[in-house]
Image (tube, rainbow, N blue to C red):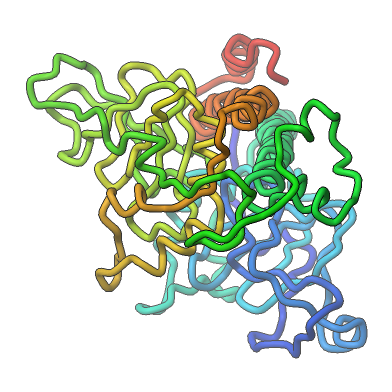
Length: 436
């Protein structure tokens, strides 16, 4: 495959930036996304800890705004992270990032996006960082970044392949967020806010079938955690689950080991699993996992580093930085919904200590309190309704991890010409198995 090397700056028709200083913000208005909203495991920016700007600021303060299809590139802090601007664009961009408008006469935009995401170009950008405390990729150095540009056929194939796989991963992520959100909303309603009980107390319709509504009382009583339904008791996670019940011993014949590290887990997603031959695994690889285990980080426990183990392979082992909760009564959907509530993470975060890496002991997780009904019927019904949601989420996550690994494995070989287009088509078609 014939390839030419072209300066990054020559592939762009426009660069839209934000003056390098903080713009005035307001309580409401148009979302202002910052660098934390741009991640290389996502196709589009996400809204995380965003601020807002007024319509007047939006119209008068900025030099320009992203358009659909522009590339949003982080320049400072974690330079090189990049996403695509969606259609429509309903946000503006803060400082330390730029929107790149691609010159389509020079390069196929989706190819440039895939190229900038590739490990080899990310490494080149890292080597061009300036600044010690806060790394910075300067716009003035764009012309020093030489990028491999193959013929148009290769650009279209590579760009479309990367975008298609990334789009499927993005669809899975969005679907998973909806499914998990429904499960968490139901748990919140029944076991935290006690909506059916409150409706009865206030003589309102519970909106539930009578057989379900009858599972809840019509009054409250006081407890050490506040008001709870009459007849319910206060229990703790350790009464519902075993904590770190199964540990990998030195003499265990398990080989190989598929290892999950804390840094690779976020909000239910396992981004990467590393395989080791037995004896070469990290000393932290000790938490054995079983079906239905909830796995929570004890380091910075308020960051949301958790996942649900559903039908895990016997080889899957987690770091000792996790607390593994194994349900005693097989009520794993109830336990997971309880243990991974944001309020629980915040509570554990306040209990953590240790300076730069605040942590808690695993047994602290076991002390988290919850209101428990006098019979298992509400929990059993909850399990029946919610398990399919979590199971579908698990399938989506597993599929996305497979697609992501495939995408990231073939990309550098396609860019270098090591893998020819017909061969890539066969590999991708065979591995996707109807996923796309």
